[in-house]
Image 1 (cartoon, one colour):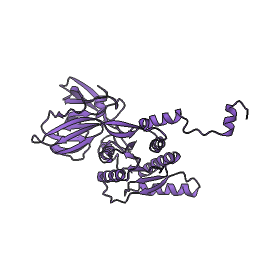
Image 2: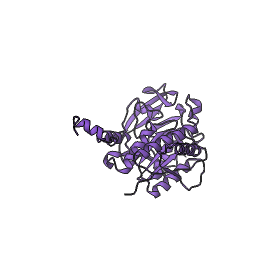
Image 3: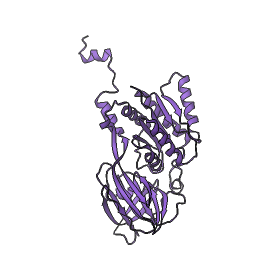
Length: 352
């Protein structure tokens, strides 16, 4: 059996939008991103992955990563897979992640590990097709990628794609929000916000007085970003067979209010008129006639009264690696345990 190839897409500029300026969040440095990748590669190698392909970038991640790999080789600690950059042009924006995901899908990689926030993961999922995703949080708002040590993500991804963990355990289907604007179709992994402003501008959404509607696929307490508004009032799990729709109101006139962490260090007073259940495969029209649409926290589309717009929640629309399930299966089945003569003798009561 041919050893599967794993793809890596590391966004070098995630966590650098305006929310980092107006709140109290820091920036993840290039060296930190390279060190995260080294830990992922170590996890992959420990499970038998021998080849990894990576999206090229021009911010310096690969340079730091290459030096780390060379140091390991020179000291006899070559515990990493072979790493190859994709042969593709670099634009320095989200189109790089999209192009890399398309290429990896055509290469039939076993999985794609993504370093970024909600926006980066959305771009990759939109082009990855049925290739499973494993997320590592390096963005501003990280509602979709779970916070976890990258070494564990690498271990779980390796266990999943090599078949050491059965597919029914390793991979899970995820909900997705689809928005149709006339003949254009876009997706969101966590939330779709409708805001009053009819411009894209700095893209990131953070001014609460512009919020008009919010659709969420899931909203879990402890998350940050726009989905936290729903999470603190009417939470919904990633596995729940429904989503939520929220209609905003002026905090002074609203039926009720909630103080929600809509960005790192930014807690806003939000007025809510009502919250509704969002069922699968049921297109929902907007209540406002014009404004902008933000996908996973970033404004992408402006619209007017002449546009036809609907939002639909989809079931099991893309696959991810269930890291916790993979590690639990590995522990329960002794996948990391190697028997030795001494251990066997001890188990037999000293006989042998």
